[in-house]
Length: 171
Image 1 (cartoon, helix red, strand yellow):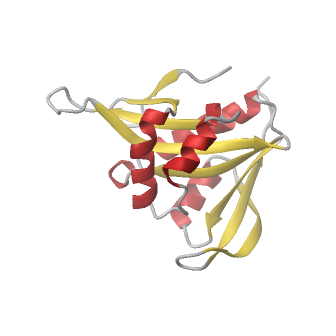
Image 2: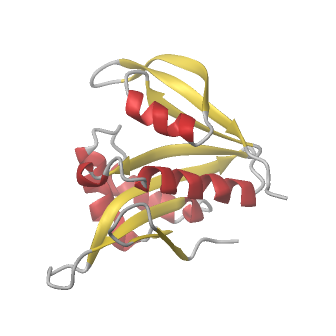
Image 3: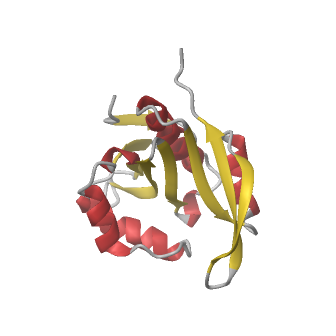
């Protein structure tokens, strides 16, 4: 079952989660840059959209009031892929002004469900060892620390904590 669009009611603004398209990439790259993630850039996201994992590339849009010139914009995104029967979550980021409002959790929950629907046996991700807020979010979504990659990140150099959760289809 592919994701079309759904509404999340995590906070007062209307948030919809839908598949990422190439028209979203400028905003996705902007969020990536402002979030200090390991940079992928436009070309990498575009290439990923052309592959088999495009249904695992999601954006969260926030509707703005009609009096504002742009009626909605991307509040956050998540990118994952299925490899060897496992879901690997590559990037998840939310604009600073929308953090701690449930959007990251909604994106993560949705991509985990997609992984289940695609029969992935488990989900994995890496997170900076010092990113306590992200680790708390991932733990809340069921992921647990299962390992560590020394000096995995650069700028600044930092270890990665590997987190994982078993994925089982809902009965």
